Image (cartoon, rainbow, N blue to C red; front, side, top):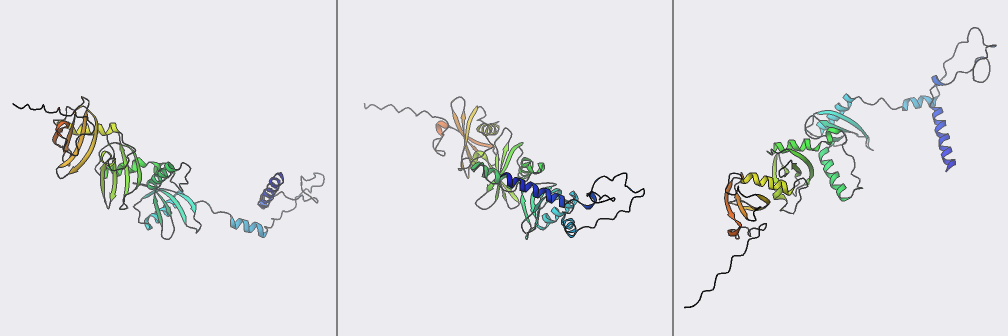
Amino acid sequence: MFMKTLAAISGAAMMAMALVSPASAQEPNNTGSGYGAANPETTPTAPAARTTPTRTPRQERQERQRAPAPPTPEENIAAAQAIATSASVACQVSQANFLGLAPDGARSYEAVCATGPGYILMASAPPLAVDCVLLAGQAEIDRARDPLADVGTQCVIPQNLDVVRVISAYASEAGIACAVDQAASIGKSSEGNLIYEVGCNGVDGYWLEKVGTDWKVSECAIVTTQNAVCRYSTAAELVATFKTRLAGSEAASCDLTEGRYMGANANGAFWEAKCSAGNGVIVRFDPQYAVQQVYPCETAQRIGGGCRLTIVPEAPAAAPTTQP
């Protein structure tokens, strides 16, 4: 091992010596053979003219092979913009970092856009543009399955890591007015549409599905009844949302402790509310969540299977009638 290390050090030293430019080499002593300081007793009063050392072919090759100066930020932006435009990505590049070359020589960049997500861009044929938010979401999914998973190239520019900023804008486009505090790309629907989860501060969150140029919005309280999971919404946030919808209705006196979505039909959407007093109700809403009707659990057994959160005492058996 020592000999290998020594050989490597020696080889590196020899290479370093070979790369020394002629200007930095020590000048020969004009008074005799060898190198070193001139002997003052034999040094001529007028120094002899110096000759410029001739570069060897090897040195000339090495100079030609030296890497060119790195591109300027402006050059990176221009190159990244050209790729984004060719890839039909709506991105006005405001910053770009050169990432390197692919095996086929295609240049790649990480780009920040003036609005929306950033991208990993590659000048391949055809040009490639990969959304930083989608990359981060897939990496999160992969690491949840395997903490040691190789998640590939990821965006690293701070602005491109701000997933909440990007998805908050999507939520606004979809008509969601909550304060988004968590968000992620979570995959695709069976139709191939991109889906994002939105977590809201203090209220129930949503799934957003990009359908063409529009957004399909699904409340997490509904999503979780369909064998899916919302990571950024809690039961307390669902209750807070449900409470606001009961305000001003005959169910407003219910001090809500639990709630659940039951389903919908042509008459409206049905939700069950459990109250702290031990009673409960089923509420029918219209599409704008205005209360249409309230059914006490005691009389709502035939609505969607009745209440599940509230235990309804069985009605006492009718007293047997006596024959006269």
